[in-house]
Length: 391
Image 1 (cartoon, rainbow, N blue to C red):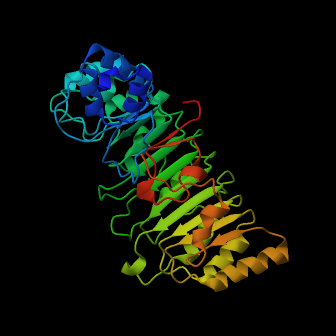
Image 2: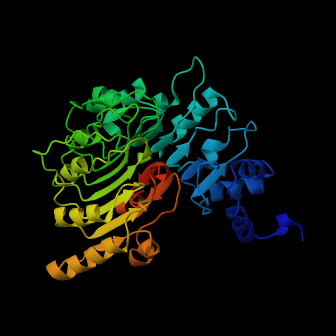
Image 3: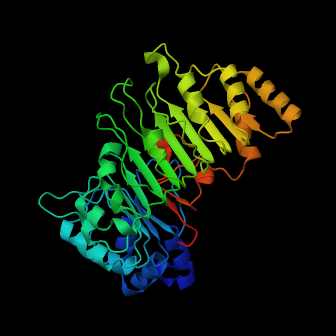
């Protein structure tokens, strides 16, 4: 039997197993029957991504299509094939299609809510973001003028070559921002934030720069301007923190704090960290990562400082030992607490105790849920977008 003699239902099952963009486009051009069936299959696609995106296991479902090669692509059929895309990664399309083709395609994508556009620059051409209406999520190197112009619609910003000092000038453009990711890889230090209050911001993820680790780190001072912030994932590279002890941040419940290598200094800034944690009396979930100077006595002090702590995870901190775990266990019995503590000896138990927490890598995660999708991950493996359940 020839493949084309198979019932349409069988062909649809076969086409549903194809997740490569080039393969789907090639199948679409075989004949009218295949064109119809491929269009039926791709109508279900919501996410179009570059394969080489750091995912350990790409999501092979009908929702996803990937592209890998840099071979030129006949894109004339893409708007027909993918009428229901929610998120598109155009960062690898530079070699596959012309700028005007991408612009035409984007204008037809009425369902598009998220755009990843790193390195998608054509000399002399305007940003492709300029042609997107209704975007709610953008991942880019920095904030282009057209992003500021459309800023009122954005709920998530993911910026990988930017700094807090520049955001201070642009923050007023994003009154509805709910999640902000900034990675400052420029080498220029970040400074005191005196920009607008971000009342809707619920999740912040910051890897800021303090030049060589000796300048003051202002990330936590920025968080003071986010009164409803619930969750923070911080990559810290300084041993000097700006901490306003007079201002308590009562909404913060989740904090992941990871440290760059502390071997460049003999000074462990515990007193500053202790003052910092006193600002967050309602913190429930805390992870401290990659600090070679953190010891058992610091764990004991934090347990006493944070009255609402229920989950305390320590990873990459070799000086934290069973003694700290014993102290937490005794503290729970003495004061009627129920703090779950994890360190190098029992860290493997965290996923069985908290099965709702995921460490799966990918550009998107389903659900606007920091604990589920961010708490167990390293900073540079965080999802680009958190997709709300409505999508």
